[in-house]
Length: 180
Image 1 (tube, rainbow, N blue to C red):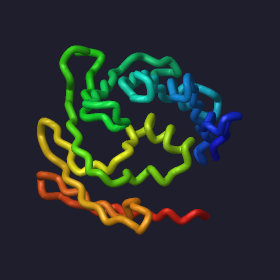
Image 2 (image 1 turned 30 degrees about the vertical axis):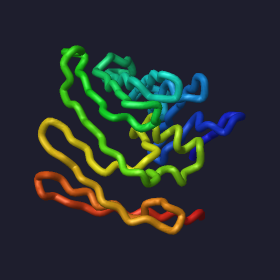
Image 3 (image 1 turned 120 degrees about the vertical axis):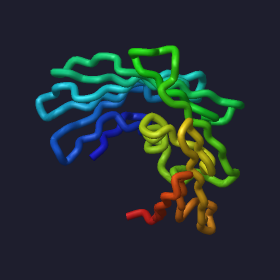
């Protein structure tokens, strides 16, 4: 169950396996996420950098015996002032100058699936999965392409997404915006 601060941002999430995640903010953006076990031993850590409201870098760590060691990072690049990255490159700490992988995104004009989420949850999704404002219609990396087709509800939110890989695999995800 999440706990919120005085402005409504998620500060702590307690999971059913007795782990919990703490989230730190600066200027309204998530700058750090740390996950701990039941004894408060560090299990994982991510740090975030921004240019304005655009996420520009995620630093991730390997954790050994509760101590975080830099493992690599992702750099996000933008073609405009959009909240949606045009591409991201992932680097290993062993070779911080040559990307392990580069992903290039193409967007449609429709709303992304997470736009219907409350603001605090959208901030969390930016940090967790690089949430996008618009719907992603294609992602390309060095080895394959993923294409996405959508169905939308009357409010313009996606209700179904079909992901098809250039390898021929496809799967469908459905979305429900019912408030419980």
